[in-house]
Amino acid sequence: MPEWPATLDVAALVTDGWRPTPFRQFILKIHSRCDLACAYCYVYEQADQSWRGRPKRMSHDVAKLTSARIAEHVLTHDLDSIEIILHGGEPLLAGPDSIGELVRLLRAEIPARIDVVTQTNGTLLTERFLDLFAELDLGVGVSLDGTAEAHDRWRRTADGRGSHHKVAAALERLGSPAYRHLFRGLLCAVDTANDPIETYEALLAFDPPTIDFLLPHATWADPPVRAAATPYADWLIEIFTRWYGTRPAGVRLFDEILLLLLGGASATEQVGLSPAAMVVVETDGEIEQSDILKVAYAGAPGTGLHVRDDSFDEALRRPGVVARQLGRLALAEQCTNCPVGRVCGGGHYAHRYRPGSGFRNPSVYCPDLLRLITHIGDTVRADLKEPR
Image (cartoon, rainbow, N blue to C red; front, side, top):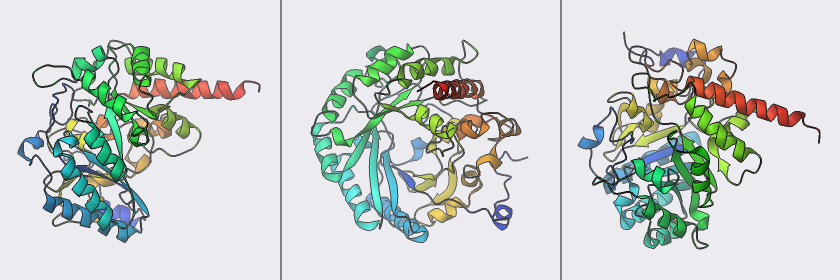
């Protein structure tokens, strides 16, 4: 029996009135290698090793095809704005000339307002890159795991050297008046071995506009390490308690949960039931789903499509993509009956994977998400009852 969502009857869903949500976020893998060897990396250290057979760089021909396919999608769905994320590996390994050529191509050929962002480990973020990014109006997100000790525990070069000093220097440059407007925020992997408040304050030291805390990518086949019942919620709640009263920077996970608790819609894959509207183009031109699915099994993000031959609308009809747009219909029964199910949304789709049943399961972080969301909800309700 195939694992879910391979069993989805997409034609029947369409007959019943379901319609896909067009893609609005395009992740372009412009370089498939990295100058760091982070031990937790989902690209290089998890089940899917397809990077080994892909070209290091996205060629000009693939870039042209990709740009044309995005333009086609924009016109088909009359989109007025989209986001394009330059990703890797480490995207800055593509070099400033290649990045400049690509961004100018995208802006020239796609008939929509384009927000272009790159997500980088920061080690190569020199003034030359920043000058180029200022010219291109290209936003920059940087990965940083907190203090030097915390960051360098995992984010090292292949020969074992830490990278925090390079990232810190890059963030000082990025935070200077000339480039501050490019700074989109910090991405931090949750590590419960680190002190949460020390981690939070180390991130705040660089005055980020927002912080994105990510749970370690895990599945039911390879679950996270637990020294307590809800260690990840406990860690995040300590930060939430410090953050809630002052909010010196946005914290994406907390902001999203608060918005969902107040009846809004999510804009992240971590929580909520909003249709996933992102798609990946690999360096060789293959069209894929979220590459975080690589943690599940080899080939999990694949669609069998290529920008040379296939439109993005064709990707919208693939069962895996459909499943990530179905919202409540894609949830396990346990999640539909859960008091925070609408807010949690089953957690990150990749974290639901269990061999044999596929992705129609609660998140492997279910206890943590229940505790975190309940705590935030209780805090907000108590706050609203306080006399003004």
